[in-house]
Image 1 (cartoon, one colour):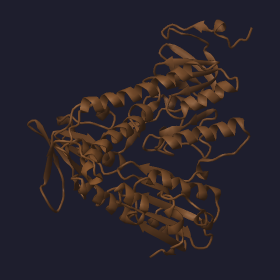
Image 2 (tube, helix red, strand yellow):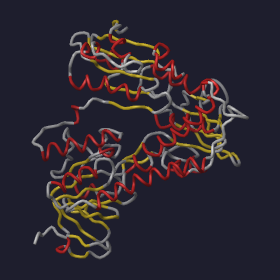
Image 3 (cartoon, rainbow, N blue to C red):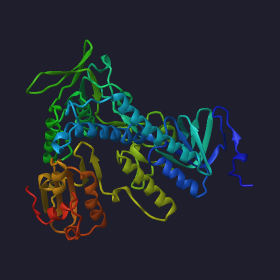
Image 4 (cartoon, rainbow, N blue to C red):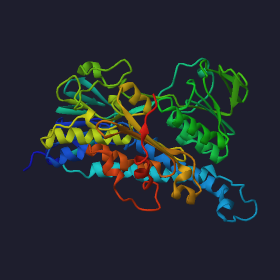
Length: 481
């Protein structure tokens, strides 16, 4: 009889499951990397224990991509309804006055999240050679993990515990109630006045979303511009998009403090203009994320962390301890679902396929899901200038893209940067309708490491946003210093 069969497992008190104490591999966490890696390990015939202390699917499924993009879709529908008359569509009495039922919006979001979460759990529990444990995993040694009263050992351990919203040490914060991107998922009422601290992609997505739902929204940002890691023209265009919809921006707020003001919250800002304090009924903190590595027992395992708590890994995602890997957001090598899944692909390819894949081989790519969205790959113009390369740039406003004109969504632009010597694409930004999809045309050519002329000479379909990328590449000019 196969010793991996459940009849050979022994009962461990406190877990209520039949399982062996010794495994070939242990996977801690069920974010985007963990379940896929568990399936690959099980397929290889390895006996695997996967541990999850909370909801299956990690932050993407429960508090990140799935719920927020579902809310973004509801907000987009509300905004489109307000603009119906521009398209010749008559909604009836009160056209343009759209009412949003936040309880129904939340219910739609919750239903989708529940389906995804249950799907991840069902998939894991159906895997052969796999034991699913629910509880908090802590290292007690480099190859032993405790889960409740149980002690599990394995020669290979994979950490995929993700991260959570950071809560800054901000004066007065302890005096008020506040929200994070996670707790916002429980909100089923419309904030009368929402103040968001943080002008990164999380804060801006929520800001536009709740403005479209009907809240008065103010974004408070310490930097002099939004999305400070983007080029100036991208930051300015995103700011213009948000301000057109009535989102208030308080930039350069270097000294932020919080004060309880009766049933409101006062947020002090150090700005040269306007009032020294903004007030809101609700406060959302969107100021970065902190890895869930505080209580994993990493010191007992000897696993090194950096000053921010992220697990230090090499180019193949191996930690400082042989036999332990860290994948996903907890390793500080990527804060996105797609980077986490790519972590799984790298580890699996190196372990099972005889390959030598590395994190540094991948091209940075992401999107900011404001509307219109920003799709980004590779280097910014500022990074290209700092690199000292001779570069070319092509740019086209969305007002000169037929598909955008036909859709009545002409805000934004597309920009592509090219190495003048190698003729390879260095980076691109597409801020505009369909930009989050069209950017992949550029990403794929960059990955192929072929000259930009391959894409320039490719016939694209009309009318699409992507068809204008070859046009942009045909109008390249030297990048200004």
